[in-house]
Length: 141
Image (cartoon, rainbow, N blue to C red; front, side, top):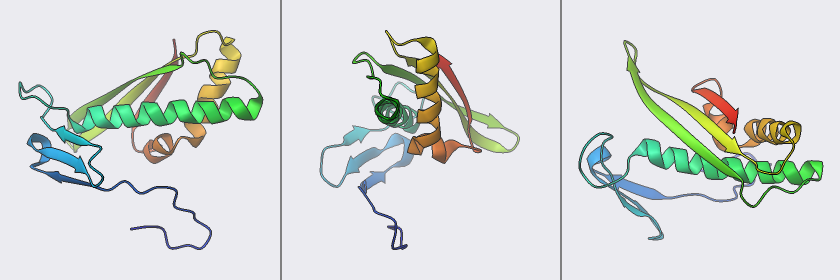
C-alpha cells in the first residue's frame, strides 16, 4: 500500500506475484521478471530469495555510492562493484538473515572509498531496511 502522508513521493512501486514459495515461480506484473525459484542447496533449477535480495541490495548500494560521489565531488569508478553475501541462518529462535557487502572502488583513495561506503550505507534503502534487523559487514576490497 502506498504511503498516505502528503509529503512522501512514491517514485516506483514494484508489483510481483509469487506462487509455490521457495519451489515456485516469481513474476512481475510487467513481465520483465520471470524466475523459477528453488530452495538453497537443491538441484532444482532456479534462484532463491537470498540471491534476489543480494542482487537488489548490491545494485542499490552502487547507486547510493554514485549519489554520495556526486555529493562530495568525485567520480564513481565505472568498475565499481559490490559482492553481496546473504546468509540464511537458523537458531533456537527461528530463521534470520545476515549479510556482507564487499565493495571494490578501484582508483579511489581508501579514505574517499570509505567515505562513499559510509554515506551509501546511511542512505541506501536496503541498508536502512536492514539496520537493526540484520547483522551487516562492510568491507573495502
